[in-house]
Image (cartoon, rainbow, N blue to C red; front, side, top):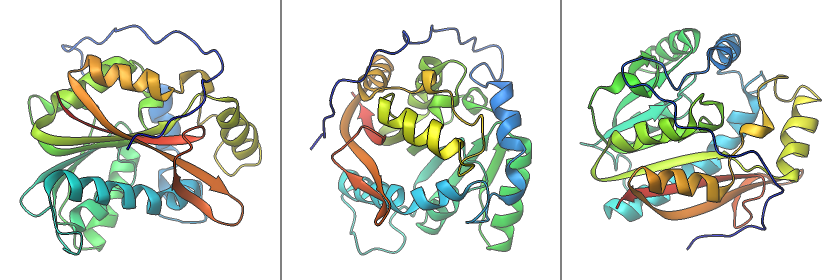
Length: 262
């Protein structure tokens, strides 16, 4: 069942559709790639600059597993439910999502714009005995490949061309497949919690987020539908000092969105 949220404060108009399929990396913002590349060395340190992502990962993985089990009619007790299926992690960073997807049995392709992050991801996966197809680049590099599961978590807000980025993800979704995205909402709460407090105190490196690039659930739903998919679920991620991050009906801070082909 879809959760709902109060109307957000006024924000910018949606970005224009400027993607040029003939130009690799058209959805990549070079400044963003450089910023995340500089964070790559301690990607797997749960107390390092990516600590917030480590804390976000458990509820995100719980949501993905629930959606995958429901959509593909899988046994929730199965240890490798994605065996025989292809999964894409776009904007994979150091592999915090790609590795769990591989452990669930998927043949994983993971792509990031920051070559430094991909180098870290490859080394870490090798140390875990995981075979993951890591690539440097953007969604434009897929060249007609399709996947049963397409994931992109906390990435669309960093894309240079957000509608084009979503269209690229949708094009990579195989018939009968499932796409799962997550992103911060554009609300007063997200500005306070993510930009003012988290970046202001150093919990997240300064300059990581541009609040004006955040998308409301309606913004993202419209982009996904314009790309030919149907949104089937939206779920919030909320935070508290005592309980940390958890799945919630409150979409005002951060949210996940699941879509299938219309």
